[in-house]
Image 1 (cartoon, rainbow over the protein chains, first blue to last red):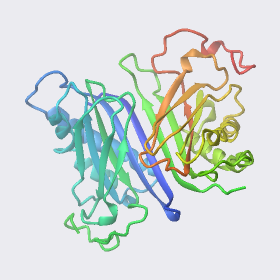
Image 2 (image 1 turned 180 degrees about the vertical axis):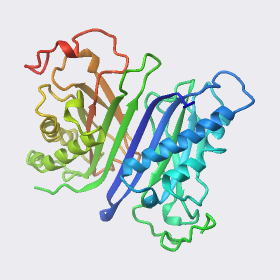
Image 3 (image 1 turned 45 degrees about the horizontal axis):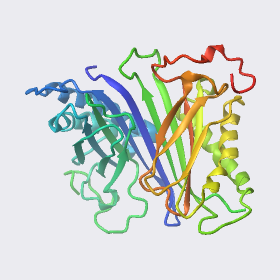
Image 4 (image 1 turned 135 degrees about the vertical axis):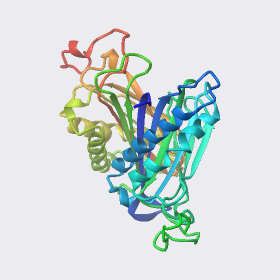
Length: 194
Length: 194
């Protein structure tokens, strides 16, 4: 394990009613966050391979945590997303190194399949700051009912030398989807788009 | 009395490995569960609200059981607890006070009747408001190592006519506690204080 983790936090949200209408079964989404030490805080380092490798470890760890928190089989996952917030001693590129080169493959193992691009966001930030993790359908990016997001926030992270890394997984879309578009049932899930 | 209408349940579990000091043998778990329900008294002054406490008991019990399960399921491992409420803007502070009895006694029932009062906090707030829920030792309020808190909040709750009720539990003291005072292994555990 190359990642030095200070803390892991997992949130689960279930929506049972919305605007007075029952949601049956409730929509459920989970997000798992690891607060890690930024090995490159405070200095410019050209080669970010170390962070890329950490991204792979975290994709598996956080994806599995979300699936476990939802109490589902990996194949029941419907949408996913990822994000990172870099403490002030680091740079935005550190988030990119964690999220983009190597995180996807192990995350896709954790949720089974995952033909679609994993939507992502990244920013610099400090303790107590909100990080919005985008969500999109895991096999067909155009499924409109599954565009969503989850907000995470920890009062004590990320400190200057840390990075908050988040992965979100759901077993459902928005509570009351009615803006048309491709549906979960219609999605083919072959090209990652439709 | 009115029924309890749940819009949303959210859980938040933090697993704390260290805070830049020597890691404990087992990571500290700190968890909270939030239920967002309709406020049956929103929009005007209602004199007789106390019977709603009885209606809230099943909700309290189910929340306490679920939080305990999310923290590993063993009541003997829970060492700290706390509770809180955020009242949506069309309600009044007193509505939050309805949570004292059903919230506190549900945790005591699930945890084997610990002695200490359950510390609490409450406020009127808008969607996205954050609440710092205080936490103290379950058997002796003066145990200094277990004074802690967990910050909770949901970006979409409470709406004006809603109540957000919170329960919190921890599996141990602050991760690097060293500020002296009454130690957990020195309590008599009879009066709930020492």
